[in-house]
Length: 243
Image (cartoon, rainbow, N blue to C red; front, side):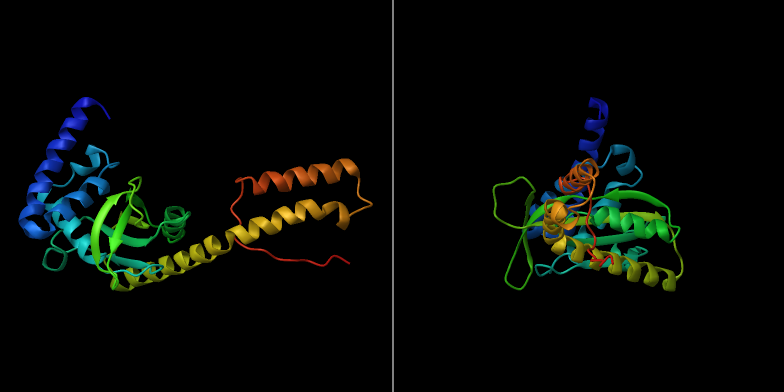
């Protein structure tokens, strides 16, 4: 981003912050400003400038309400067409919003699920922030991912895609995304165990195939070791008995 763009973005965010102050009031204004800073940090001015400060502020307020209460491990998900009456803002696109424990594969899995439904992704915003919550899960504070606080990191995702007017279509999209996120949870939860099993497989190949060609066996072990060395995403394990 060049200096001119940085200045333009800063001016717009200052306007958004002023609107947030008026919408949230003095008690929650600091929370709103912190969220704005982290949420829009990597969004280029060309994308932000398509909306005015009032719309951007209303979008943030709506999201803060959406993520206001969440327990560890809980997945928040909604797919909707924003409207002024309910959400305080409108968009020419339909919207996906998700809040999860920070973990790999979330954005890739969500965009793949949308692509499989023939949908056109137009914008992805994905800050990872540290979130302090009370015992009941209520939102207390938001800090940068690299801050020294021990608060857990949460993944906040907004995906804008081509407008869908049908309520049934939005419900189906949400159901498909929920299924994809459940698959992500399973893969992440079991990833270390699967990688460990793959490594054991590589180590045990000589026992399993003592008559195999030494060069082929060595190449097979090298390949398995390469997979385990962060070159492959393990999604499942199956054993075969070859007779």
